[in-house]
Image (tube, rainbow, N blue to C red):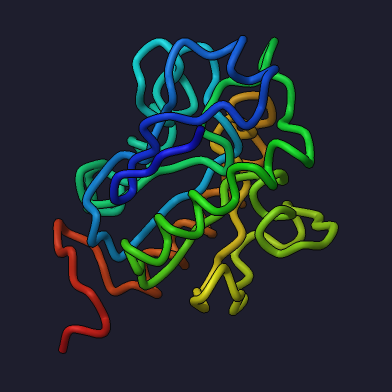
Length: 196
């Protein structure tokens, strides 16, 4: 049985392998009216333990990058394509991504961000529905239909990539600069472009 309360998945057993490997469902975190929404791949061990997406080292990279641009984690929403930890932190399988897609589409429709930022290859390819060379396409913006709504989507490398390959840092930073410029946010200003 799968249940969703607003943007929160409260119960789901669609993916037997993920049900076995998770200790909890990890839902999105942050304001439900954020102008900027980040989408990662799936929870890792620390996210599964704490029940929040993007904690640990890659979360620190993202938090620091937001702070450098005048934002805090509480200004943005962060979620994942898959809400349960895959065994051994493997990439989610195609069927698992498909099983969770409706939850993500519902969350995006309810939050209605000005910009969706995909962090890494898995969420970018999942939402654009094509093969993507993330490093080459980082910073590019696409209009994409997700469920019943169309969203502006910006491609970004995963924060963890900057930990393993320092040359990815400038690509990551430039994509985030573009994201912040597109939503008109910064210096703590959580402006929504459509609200003027």
